[in-house]
Length: 293
Ligand SMILES: Cc1cc2nc3c(=O)[nH]c(=O)nc-3n(C[C@H](O)[C@H](O)[C@H](O)COP(=O)(O)OP(=O)(O)OC[C@H]3O[C@@H](n4cnc5c(N)ncnc54)[C@H](O)[C@@H]3O)c2cc1C
Image 1 (cartoon, protein in one colour):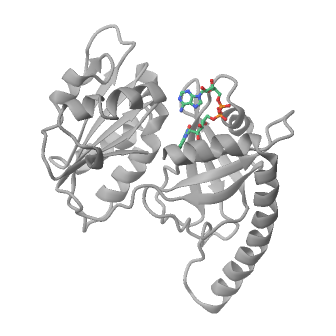
Image 2 (cartoon, rainbow, N blue to C red; image 1 turned 90 degrees about the vertical axis):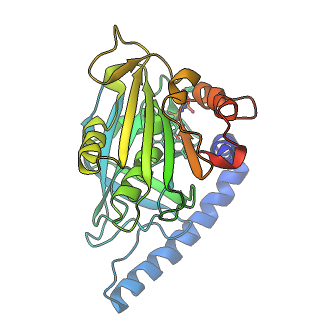
């Protein structure tokens, strides 16, 4: 995923690459739209929205503020029978031209809705101070549009790949983690146990809290979580105080060999957890056992 981050950063400044992408994208879009329509006309299968490279522009159906800096946005597919066509842990590259900027901005966002849901797709976006793309997306209101360039495949998950997996999320890094959690738990053929550690700054930053609680109720013994809040007066009602530390992880991770640890969070958190000298390495997890979104 470091490659994806580098890709999105370099694309914001490289006009040559942008022009090439734009020309290729428009061609790909026309081709993709044609095939999408004719494939749909000839079969009864649901069309898919994101099947390759090409611009896809979707209308905003609704916007909901979750807290002071995060919004959930539902986007409408032109065909109400269409599905996203995304595989589990995918993100979508958005392509926007924020107000007052000549150069476009390309950033990935991870859908939080069921990827097989027909007719709509939902994103949850945190706004960063002076954030080019996140500020643009936060300015959108119902009826506005957002353009998507292509999908990015994340980790290639297979049901029952491991008996138990761990997930560590920080802040808005919960989105790919949540997509994977729901993909595993909503699949009756997948029996994987999941333990989540979710670290945030304040209690209001515990995004998707209701959804996660619902999964915990529906899957007792299979899904559990620990919430840790750095700016908390005192520990209370299932909330721990502080950062995601080695001490905290020692109490959650059991050191199994047949497991995977998925990590997604702000750069400082990922740096403290991963890498050859990171907390996970010190707890005995090798490079192949850790996946960073
Ligand atoms: C695979 C992938 C999936 C993602 N999915 C989501 C998602 O579902 N929802 C979501 O809100 N974001 C998601 N992101 C992050 C998103 O792509 C952007 O990086 C983010 O919205 C900031 O972009 P920007 O243009 O607004 O900020 P920029 O203009 O690039 O940066 C503005 C300021 O914000 C700071 N900043 C930027 N990103 C971060 C960060 N992650 N942590 C801390 N500080 C930061 C920068 O250091 C800078 O100071 C994802 C990232 C990846 C790689």
